Length: 240
Image 1 (tube, rainbow, N blue to C red):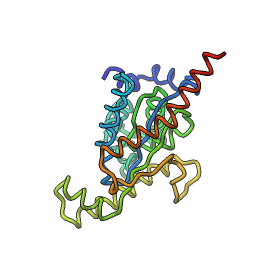
Image 2 (cartoon, rainbow, N blue to C red):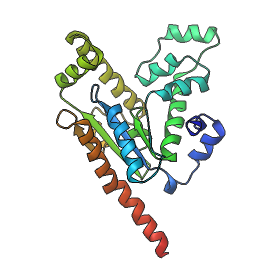
Image 3 (spheres, rainbow, N blue to C red):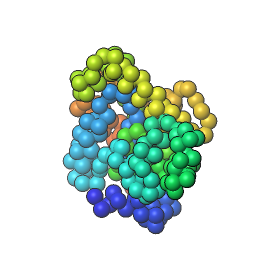
């Protein structure tokens, strides 16, 4: 837990961001459509990675980042959460915050999210759920970027079961949350694109596979891509 809070210490984060790109990662980013059980997948995956590599370093991170960024900015967590959900506060709301001494610009929130997320990814051994991770960590070589998808009504039914919603509420939840997550990714892209498939190494259909099966497939892809790269560099270093 202490290591987690290091990311919110400016000096520590700056040192991580200045690391050589060759030392970045490894990291797995997990983008998802609403209702695809990304947290459950990440929890199993982190446990299996730690078991496979005999370590305790791997961990998964989701929206808890929001609250620590808010604490760093000395602002309401809702301010950061609005941005993470792809929402902009109205001009009136920003005026009220400015007069009350609580104003924090969208640019400052965006920079804080970028710096904290990127420092976590560069430090490595992290499974990052959402937070535009595939965009922010796109230059990290030892990274695997995945996206979980499923048919609309499969996801609606999953949300209905997990959150005890009726079908109309679940439909609205899926549509609204999907849009906000897409907007967050767009906010960090240099060039906007309606098609974001190119950001990911692979896309998995949650409706086709169980949670453990998806975690197993991600582990296989990680070892094929990232694990292989790390092993080849180690071998090259021994030869030199």
